[in-house]
Length: 161
Image 1 (tube, rainbow, N blue to C red):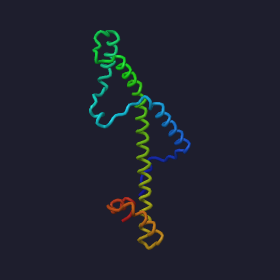
Image 2 (cartoon, rainbow, N blue to C red):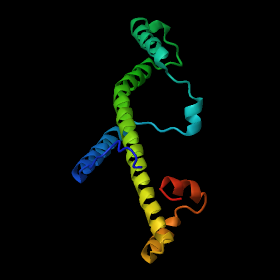
Image 3 (tube, helix red, strand yellow):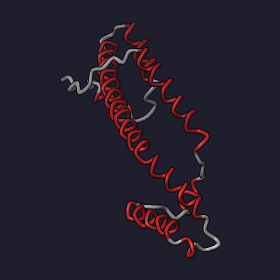
Image 4 (cartoon, rainbow, N blue to C red):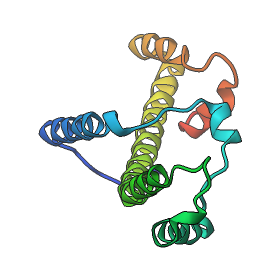
């Protein structure tokens, strides 16, 4: 039984090249403005959540309208600059996440379908090898290197015994 073909695409190399170039261009454009953190730093920093956005925005408004309350340890200009950058990057990040999810789904689907088809071929070659075809035996031995353990369950999916 053949599996359902959920996706059938041929992305022209020109498109792959253009997208790769545009991603590199985006990376190069943003690089001077981006920060880097370690995994530990990401875990320990207090983060601005959706609920905090309105609070931070209101604080910035108050620092402008009522600067006498800005504490000495606060840099109000830096706060406003960071908030503005944060808000400018959020929609760009959202689009990049959408593109990433589209690619992730397509990579998963195309990989799944190619692998299942390859397993069908492997199963067919194994059957031919068992029937005594010398060429099939050579191919089956070469392909079997992919399955050093747990061969039986994967081979069954390929249409073998």
